[in-house]
Length: 511
Image 1 (cartoon, helix red, strand yellow):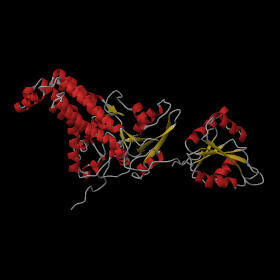
Image 2 (tube, helix red, strand yellow):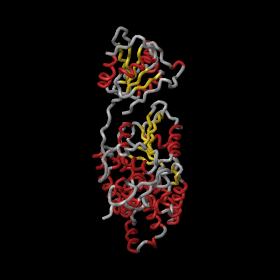
Image 3 (cartoon, rainbow, N blue to C red):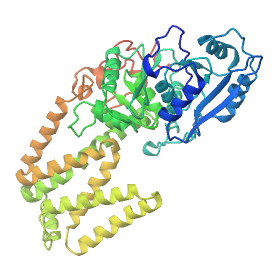
Image 4 (cartoon, rainbow, N blue to C red):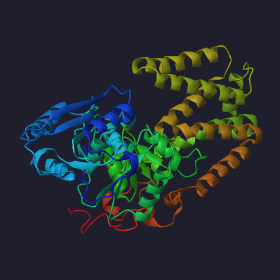
């Protein structure tokens, strides 16, 4: 929950026709006829204060977005029992109510119709008093929220089970629980002319470069869009290399991952209504890292990380290498294997390139169907469909058995690195087309083109391959190999521009 900070009395006030009137009836007229016209979810609760000179008041709020019990007990009841001094006028009335009557966690003064409209849509209550051209905002947000559960897209065997939800305040608190430091800072922005979605920028003041924070804030503020419904909107607007299939902004549903990224000097962005946080800068090496790597033994984590690198190579390269070998370089294959492949392809009417493209398309169709259907049905469709179609295709001599094996290895290997699965498909197709035209030479040329693309990319000023092409030993301790924690005394120099010291004093107890 957010606590509105009270505006000072000398704060600048909006001028012109948007300014509230001292007449309560005039204000209600404009709200009902203009700001909230034809909106039946807006509640206008009129009441009077006590005393020798009672004043007419109204509480405005959006139904189903506030805590009714809270408003009744801590706002309405104290106001209806309040005895206002007779000599109070104008803003003095608002000061008296906010300081001595309303029992709210925080209050804020607003002066314009549109400003009150925006606040009401955020799920707060606004109090207007006759004779006072100031509205009092009281925090009473209380819409339904999803319980904190384990994120389905990033399940782990060992590690925290908490995942982000759709409430921005809850998501920030989940990160703050892991970073209980006064250096943990949060900046709030509003994006979208219609939605006015709240966006939070998280960083560590003593670690993160302020230039990076300013650049992230600048890019978000430059967005000109009517609504932001998910963090994916912001990701597409502010990312580097927008035409490249490789992501330059990370995304995660896990608070522990966000905390770990921020501790390294990155910036995190949370969007109200979205369970996915964005982290930047994002480097290629991060796609092969998992939060579980840092909770398990470093030798086990290193092995699993190497498996991810090998799996990404397999899912992008195996089909192209297979096509190149059977079409152009059969002499590189053992004789018995060549004979076996030739025999399996004897009655197949299509060339290898057609087989690999069609079977790859069928595999993606089955995967997409399994994702979109309800989970029990989707799993059955994916597994049974793949087995039945593969067996039927081989029996009908539409594809060869080795091609089924190649497609199966390619598809399964792609699931090992889920963050790169979507971009592996176009890379695979690109390499297959080159290999079908030029053989292994085409595959090598395609691989060089991909490496050149990666070498030219940056993420918020940081080279995309910075930790994989450096010769500094300190920078490669968390790349292909995950060294023990007591060996990673410094934060990555490409990210942490201030305090790089991660470990203090003795790094490991002596036996």
